Image 1: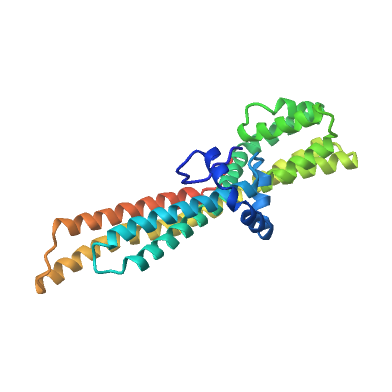
Image 2: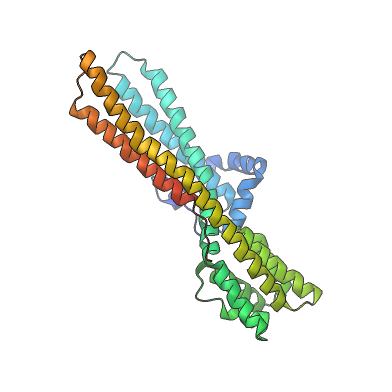
Length: 292
């Protein structure tokens, strides 16, 4: 998977060359934060974690300088101390860019997990039908290496490793170690253990698919329960609170000379639209990647 530095204002190859002064600091940072190396290992990217972090540091410094200069120019025309404002803006910009860039690999991993889990049950059923019909696991993996999106891509890598001379058990273990999906790992580890012990993988896949289906049903029930709570919050924040706020403003304006202008109404409307947008994103992020 190709990993790009978010909010980078220059070509990545150019940033990679300019970030060399930050490389030693990035190496020390990655050594102290092992989770970054694990994230890049699971993303299977050609970009090393150290190079990524050096570009992140360069990007943070660049945004800090730009933000500091702009704020200094703007505050220079006011009574506010431009130096302190520029320093504060530079620190905030650098921190925001750094935190966002640190979270970006985890976001990519979560995206990859959802893509795999979306078709994993169908792919597992395919393997179950093939193996219970007497087809070897290798041929079943070859058959399932197309038609199931990200899962087929993972199976294709396993098949390619086996064609390259790697033992099937080692290829399965390597795929499970690199993949961030918990359910994918569980299925692959079970297949690997079945091959090690000499057990028929057909019955193993039948049991795995049944457990996987039951687990996805539980996820759907939990998501349904969460939707009830979110629906109440949506009614409260997007309908009741704005309505009551306008009523109170009308009542107060009748006692105190506080005009309710078009700008106030536009501000309330923008707040409601923003809240609804946040709720849509929240509901979408909590939706489980099920395929029952």
